[in-house]
Length: 635
Image (cartoon, rainbow, N blue to C red; front, side, top):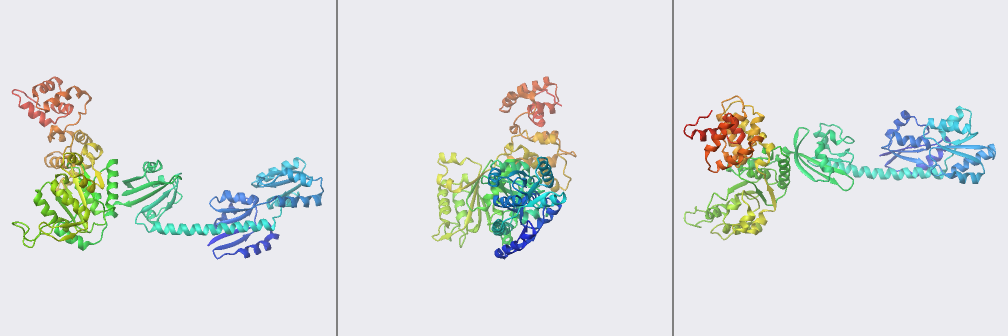
């Protein structure tokens, strides 16, 4: 129901107004009437329960200031209304009377025309509150004006100060038009509310948080889940900066459509944000990371677990803090919702299978099987029989009754082809047909078996180079590369090294039932100096080794040097003074003479540990090489 208040300019107009309202009553509109005047804020503030207010003159302008969020319909004063009042003045006070007209606006009236038509001396002033009205009256009196024309506020002031006054009357047509405008506005507002209610119900049904934010960073729309996420706090009308990372919102305002995994309000969220149209409004959707992993079908998954056909990892198991990785996780989460083939590339040990299993568990196939096979671990013939199965008697030694292939086992689920670049090219043609036709034929069989399988592949090789060498089919590459994810090496994610290392230290300490030793920042800095050709897998092994071997109550930079990470892992020495030693160290690593490096060590006057840090080689390696020189001593 839309509530409309009609402020009737004066009591004589009440019967006429009520007849007008009765003629336009509508089931969706509730009308009320009142007679009041002035600009008192306390009085006008009480009118906030109304959606639409019809008012005249000074009261109308004051209402717009007090209630900027309400629809205020102005009862416009016409030139005809003013001329009628001037005629009354002329008849009552005579043609030579000086007249002062005080209105809330003079935009629609021509003072020159009025003077010409009446032949009277007329002045006009604008007043929007009682103070301005008093000032205008005094000025007019100073100018010799004796009769005034205006609304109820002027009428009250004139009566209190014994000033001659003629009240402006509102014509029937003017009042009727204002009420008609109010009805049209009410119907429009009702339709707008209906659309807003439908939109609110729609977004409230979404299983994730939805926020719409205006260009001035004000939240203009929020669904129920958003309010729950922020513990019931009022969101609409508030600044987004109180609830959301400002830097992330700035990216959206800059026109970047963003998807990212980010901590918001203390929880890991999958976020999508985009700028809508030219208005600068930003639409933000946020979903708790854990909700991607909430799946039903526990009995089905239990059976799959017994068979080993289940993915163990989720996106929440991916440990990363760098922006590139958080954006990559968000991208993978979006890919998970699709059903196309995925190719994951990256160096060995970067976590390709972790991403693949996470995508499976976040997809609508999560209740289905997850079947993984390493294409590099099996010969071509064996790999073919494993993938597609074989019929009874297909070859010597075949199992009686045949065997179900991995594609059949993965029906309604995901098959993961690891090291796809190692698949023999003869088998690639058969795989391509399976991807195209969605059906397989067992080795030695003649029955076509339909399969509903999503294929995800991974490789640490450069597939385009293999294509150029004739080792990989170009058409198969296009088929498996519908959705692609490249995982950057650990050396390009320096910020993640400390986070990962501390995680692994804690993990292996708990397995050994010991307290996790604190890790110094200097130890992390030492780890960041290495290439990590084995990436996260190698870092994990180093963490396990240091937990087992470290005999101290904390892990320091010296602890890292003592575990003897191979010198091939060296990247750049941290010391600015080590530039002259780099060439010698590199030469020495390629099999050069150790004597020259030992001479530099003696002349440096440094301890072995400090010299090792300077040249970027582990202390243990230097100690072992220097001891091999006859007659040399090292600290």
